[in-house]
Image (cartoon, rainbow, N blue to C red; front, side, top):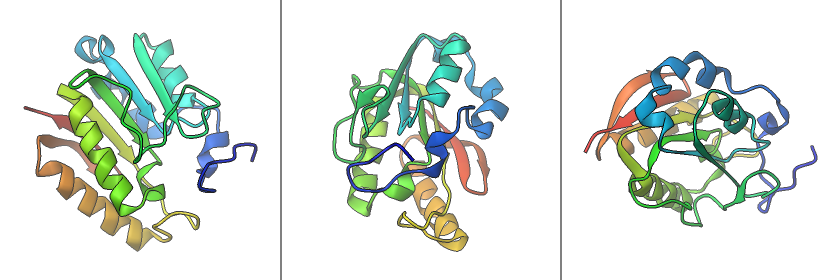
Length: 173
């Protein structure tokens, strides 16, 4: 693995070239003009595979964020403010990010997501258990998924899709 992260945590999926299958399967939900004209944040973009895919589909303003800084904007998720204006984003991807953040960092990132999300914004979250993450097995990651979903769902976020280790929410103000 050529990517060295600041906290020695990294996602093994960063080396893949094709976009996340969950994103591809659900692009019909996300590929709307109202979303395509707004800012897209690819949080924890890795090598940019999802960002490149969305740009190829005509999403106009895709901002790739990763702590390594070798693709997109360097941003330490859970510590740095998201580089976006309040209520400016129409789509936020958090693929394979949350399980590498501690509780405080997860809370900060959730607050930042809520701040930058516009009305009608979609949030795509994918999780997986990893030995170098805070959630090392499937039971732990599924328990965490439920807690994360419930935390977001108590604010302005509503379920669009929900399945094992992944979900899509939409913000309604």
